Amino acid sequence: MEKEWRRSMPLLSMNIVMQLTGLTARQIRYYEEHELVQPARTEGKQRMFSLDDIDTLLEIKDMLATGVNIAGIKQIFEMKNNPALKNDAKQVITDAQLRAIVKEEMQIAQRHQRASLRQGDLSRFFR
Amino acid sequence: MEKEWRRSMPLLSMNIVMQLTGLTARQIRYYEEHELVQPARTEGKQRMFSLDDIDTLLEIKDMLATGVNIAGIKQIFEMKNNPALKNDAKQVITDAQLRAIVKEEMQIAQRHQRASLRQGDLSRFFR
DNA sequence: TAGTATATGTCATGTTAGCTAACATGTCAA
DNA sequence: TTGACATGTTAGCTAACATGACATATACTA
Image 1 (cartoon, each protein chain N blue to C red):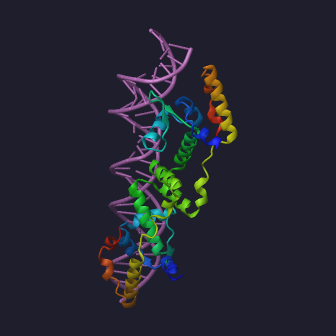
Image 2: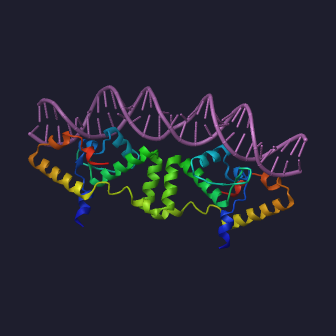
Image 3: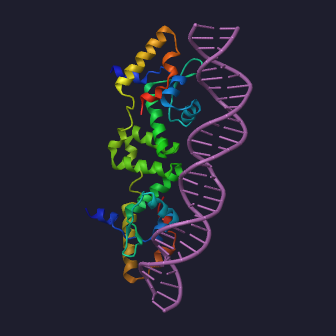
């Protein structure tokens, strides 16, 4: 499609991007340093931004204003590019562990002797 | 399904959750304060955690260790619950704006007079 | 009923993320 | 070649985040 290359075409200089986004050059470099944007470069190493880059920068600006930090933004960007990551961390407790815990809980509740299992450091069962 | 209610059944006390997660009570309350977990309560206002809550807490622990802050975690949790949000912020620049910018750029490049449009604060066109 | 665990609130604190300022050097259009 | 603009780097500020620590009150448990 035609719009596509337009959006990804690097044609904007640092100067104009600053005005478009309201960000300082230092801020923009900072975000690049943290791999949130990857503007193209001219022969002489000067940055050339695409319109997609502008979108990204405005997103960053928004999220930072919301209180999300760089690390968080990075995570979110990764999730957007790879929606599979959405489900990774869930189900941290396996069904076997689940059964064990429930069983223990039941036994403990039954004999009203709440000190046994809880004394030990259960966190070793996870991670 | 049977596993479902088990996982969402609130049956764990603060004490045991601390051991399961390795988090302090203060930390857990802090996360609840910021609406990252919503444990059930007993009559006497004491927290009762489900196994899903444990999962959530372990996720929080992981992400914090990665450097993501509370605000970021909140965002990510919201994205997981509502994948539609994934696409919200993109396409910040409308096609009309896009065309305008490209046109200006072309004209400017053409007459090699790079001062005109760039003088003004273009950021007013956005947000 | 005593004793332990939890709730809630407030005050305090270390760490560090995000940023600004400033410099010396390098690029680029006219 | 000249002057505006960009570059990478260093140093340092500041505000806020995530916890700790404490005090008091209420809830469980034996």
